[in-house]
Length: 135
Image (tube, rainbow, N blue to C red; front, side, top):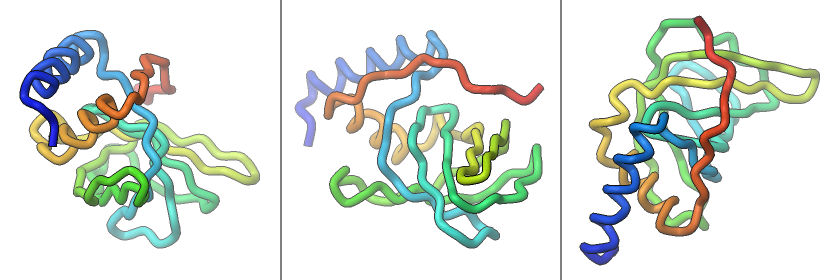
C-alpha cells in the first residue's frame, strides 16, 4: 500500500493537524444512518466530524448517538466503514438539507484514520474552515 516513510510522514502531518483543529478533507461518499431512509452524501470528513447533504429533510435529535456507515464512491478505492455520530447542527433550504456531526470515537477508528490518510496521500487539501456549531 503506502511506503513506510510516507506513512510516518502522513501520521506526523495528521498529528499537527489534530493540534490545529482537525482539518476536513473532501470526500465523495454515501452515508447510511441507522433508523433513517433515503440517500445522503458525505462531502467532507475529519477525525472529529463530517458534513452530510441530502435532498430529504431528516429529523435528527441533538445529543443522540447514531450508528452510520460511510460508503466511499467506487473511484475512491476505499472500503465502507462504520462510524458513530452526534448531531451538531442542521441547515435546510427548499432543495437541500445539510447536517454537521461530531464523530464519536473517531480518534480510535482505524478505518477512519486509513480513509483520511488515503485522502491526504491522494492530494486532498485540508480545509480548516469553520462550520456552524451548536452550543
